[in-house]
Length: 380
Ligand code: FE2
Image (tube, rainbow, N blue to C red; front, side, top):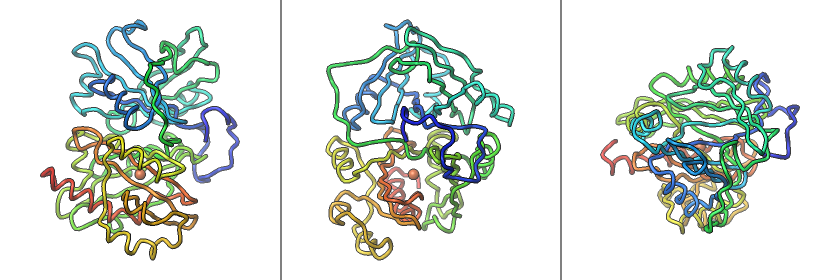
């Protein structure tokens, strides 16, 4: 998957059930509304190895907000903060804390993407508009999805600037080394009780996605927590959106905890892919990123479950990296603790070695780790 080297819409179909009225080339960027974009940008650079790309603020003519654009390989993050009281961004941060506002999708035709999705029932967020500067033009449009999250369609084939018109290149002295993060593997949404099917139907009907895999609450309940999850994917398989809803357990589901602190539905985690999870996670840990750990007993039996793997088990165990296998291969994954003060969003690091699934075999061990954290917060 590349942001630049493949604009063909006639790709082999990864998910033959999905429909083609909304060809998506990839994730264009993810925009977070945050309380302090300058310091958040420093966190994603110094802890996560993102590089500075572009900036918009008072110096570029904006009066009420500032945005920093960061990138690592094909992952592009936009961090936006308000500069004055009042307004939508402040209200969003007040309601939700820092969080993902927009999952922007890269398309060939942002006008058609808007028309096709709105025609099928999407609620409009932004009518198509053309943004222009000396570097060319970009067409953007947008629709609402779960909670206050939106999808922005970005058509950028006639643009050569650093990000979008209005942004200027940002080239500070501090240029951190990348840590091997390559692209967004999937973005997961948490929705309220009994809302999973509604939002899966939204992605099917409005965006032409189809379901990839499913499991029910029996698969992923522990003594306390439970949830249900379905994975929706577009036709070429580049965009994967698992949707979770809480399910009844003896105590509070981790999804309920999220919904309570985010004050509604929203993005639970983004999964970032690496080609060398041991190196990437070692570097992240050294820079202060905190991960969920599983009991060492997990590693006593894991190879019985997943079979042979290329990696040595010892470094995986030392770092707490989880392993799972499906019919097509295996995957390695690990999850951070919440990266914000509110127990809301976290980040997954994933390395796929053939597997196309999402680590279902790890969910029980993982959820028990989350429950230990919830217990320490008094929210279990
Ligand atoms: Fe995930």
